[in-house]
Image (tube, rainbow, N blue to C red):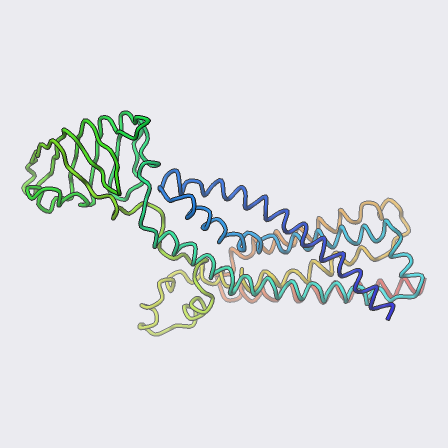
Length: 378
């Protein structure tokens, strides 16, 4: 009964530190990324609500990336705290086996490993796909926030704007518009099907998803390379159907794991045509292993951190050993991240990536158990 209370206490301390560190890292990284996402409002004209929803949907992905490092730090900090407060010494003098404490650490690592796998395989792709759908399905674009004074704006696909001045009341002065997408080829019958249209206007204003222009000229280039000029006192251009340059096609990291596995397994031509990522097997393999393979390194860094439980007579080594062990474990995480880039090159690399943490874990566990037995003998 007493041992169970000890194990429960140790587990609570480690998990508490893990959650605190993870949330701290996630908050900092999410804040930085949210600043980068401000372009959605400034450059692409999305509303603040869309921007806020989009940034929120990216939180789980950021959180997942910090899980291994946060757990490593929580173990190092917790063990150092137990040692500093003489709690470990009390446990050893009562005859508690060190390997049983190591097994408790290992069980916590397994739980966190499966949590990260679930996040990577299921939750993250779902929320990322939702965030991409949010941009794809949002039709209203705030052009007023995109168009700036004395600045060229190419936020709209195939359309370039230049505004000489922008008045506080929203009036636009000396407007230049270059359309190469054919978005304005229906503003006058004379424009025909030209996809090369230039518009000049002395003044304009945006109201209800319409750009109202006054006193200007429309120049369109016809099929026979002749320029047609159309003069107007007032004309209205609809901008509700404009498409901005934000990437709206689903990326690999936003695709469900089930689809990615199907992409790797599909061999016949029909399945290949239905899989947009079939030609990017390297990226698909990397994405799958990031979701399901990276978490396998959590038990490995756990067993490495457990070497802090090994006693050494040299006081100097006892002082710096936590830094040494952290450095080696951190290098393992960096190695895992770098090696991940080469997993899609060949099948052997993929198997090596999955087997490396398992083999190293068994080796380190054996060494730790051996050291634990050796301490008892001496």
